[in-house]
Image (cartoon, rainbow, N blue to C red; front, side):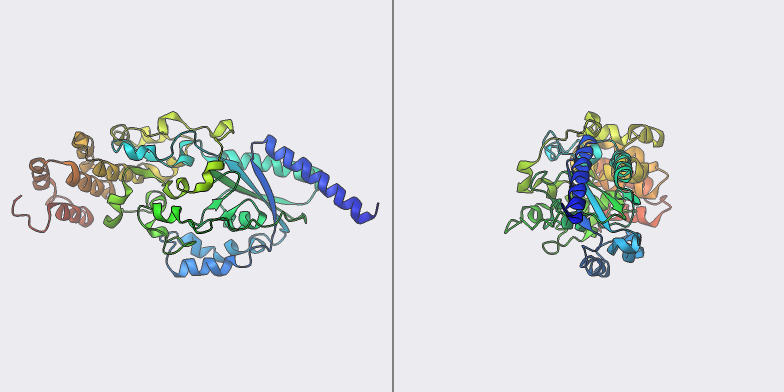
Length: 389
């Protein structure tokens, strides 16, 4: 056997052991891409930012150069190992839409924070690789300037669908991504081709029409962006479309036909918390800061903070049509955060009987110190307020 053949056999054996170790750790797929495998990414990212589609996520513009090329982020990288961990739901992910007095939380956030779970497993897997083959490694899970989806597509984990998310023929749309950068030269797995065809289910399912065209996302219109990344008031044009989605939005993911091949998550630590599947809005509206932190300890939801979370819940309350939430919402007219107060005003304008709304407007609008909240009162009253005053 020639030296090259022996080396190939050694590499094959290493990768087989590596894949087996990844499976033992709970990963559902593993593929490899060369560090230079996404040459089109920098230009696409540049167009995305120049179009303003990144909204207030200024860090995307600030890290463009590092984000667009793994070799800029870490010059020693030669191969990128991409891993998938399934988080497929065991129930209808959109069932909450049928119960407007309950809250809709994105499937991934019903679990323990995936960053904590996956990063620890990636570190263990990376150590296994180093112990067997040497080299240097770095691990990333959605917190560094890494374009995981293009890299995962290049590696062959799946392809970026028309909703820009990764789709797998084995896992559908429900899986997390993690990456191991290594200085080793490993054989690439080969890219996956696009299997979307003429389907546009994901595009048509979006409540806010956040896709200007197939394979393009305007984050400023995306409910996931609005409920998680966006600070300040929710733009009025999107409030009704949010419905009862208080953290993220799974509509485009759930619409994908490839989900028929998806499996319920098997990784025990990712099993959903039952108390985060359609919780009552009234219970969430009662949370003070300490209760919020306690309820969402270990959850990705905790990162957005109590005020932004309550803003979202109040929008859901306004969309619920439930006058029974009146007292729960009214409490927040005295909240210290003007964004929360403004959301409470909007919610009450939707669910309060006219007589109660009129009385509240008399009590609060004139004394309200913040311009934005006073505007909410004015818009809630309508242009002609003579019927109130």
